[in-house]
Image (cartoon, rainbow, N blue to C red):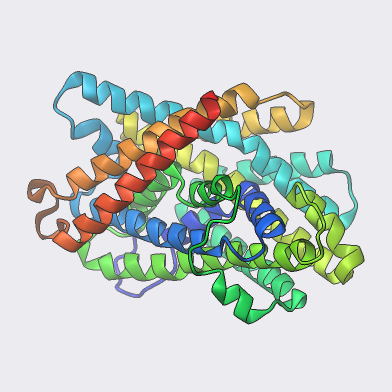
Length: 401
């Protein structure tokens, strides 16, 4: 729960970083580096800045109003139909979306451990699921937070070390920060942004800030925490792009997945690189396997107005249900494609809706007092909302086609 002292400590920002660095991000960054070298690094820089701006707004909302984003989406609209629409979008995109992606998180983490130990993946699927249940079952936000902070640092050490082993051309890497759009790269540019700017992280961060800090005086701590954690998450993503670019793009080797990338690293760079990547891939999988159900429970709790918080049986039923869905799909090879497509469509809707709503609320002096947006924050926020809205619509258009 929230501390009363003023001492800074890492916190909610690392939950966001742990959430967006999952198997999907590792795979997308792998494909970006293998297919286009360093050219798409600029899109990760943009994604990190976008994440910082949006998550700072959710943190400020929680500190100034005492309500997280889910509660605000439920309580702010005066029109009953609008309120019902926001609740429906939240439940469909966040709760069902997290359940749809949980299998990928569990499988990704188990693949990482299989790379390192040689023990069959199915055993690790059960282990990761039980570990997530045990951790969230402790009903302690601080325990979850500390566990995920450790995982983020493990990912950092693993992926950054692997990138250093690759010995990239630093000049070429720096040129990757300049915007360029090679032929057929737009899809991956959008994917890199979409896998970093995650709708459920808006809900997760606002709830986590409310758990840790209760006063607007702690806004500097929120911002410091975000800058450190999200920047570190961005470095992890960039290091995966670098590793893939050096290992495969430079050598003209075709690659289709992050698991294939790991298997290819050993003959190219030895068992150390393979082990480092495997450990990082495991950390990415289990961190998202914990944050996805946690975010689903927070979002559902806020949207439906549950007052008991993390100690509620309903709160526990939501995250347990998400983990069980992921475990079932992972163990029995069910095809989750319909659910995932549905989750992608609703995510494409909820990100712009939540972003627009966030911008509206952050201009309400009645709710936030002096913590309302400045004109500069509104300008940046408006630009971000326009871009994420286009991304959301593009996602829906792409899936329908």
